[in-house]
Image (cartoon, rainbow, N blue to C red; front, side, top):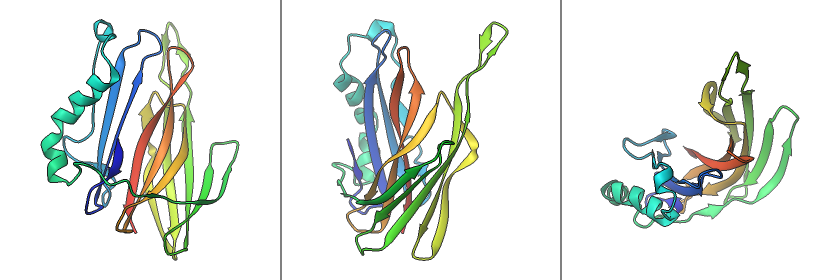
Length: 202
């Protein structure tokens, strides 16, 4: 589930996955206020199941979060959410250090440029212990002579290997933009792609 509130001020993203080791289901919900680019109080949740719950379906995991946030979603006009428009990509590039530059076209035909920078701290072994993979990101936004930044290179997230811009969406009223960022996390086998919602008002 993903989409904007009726007034375009909020965005919901619900995703699920299953642990590649024990098969434990996991659902994560983000309810983001786009003007402040921050989770609303009580709106960003994740399930916490154990190995004994590995037989549960992903739908059960998702439903548990939907039930917990029903009144919040109703108040924010997110029942149901509105899809919005995926903005067309005009150009995209990525450098060896993980810096990504993407230009998309807004509904008024004006270009909007996003430049994602990241800092990555790989896990290390210190004695018998291993540290966590950590990464921080910041997105510089440029359009119509204006500039703003989302995130910070000083705010690291644990268990993240790399960031990449996946999609840019415009709210139905054309006043808010959401950037869906893929965060690659280490998994029991390989990696797992998760999503981080970033947003702002035009």
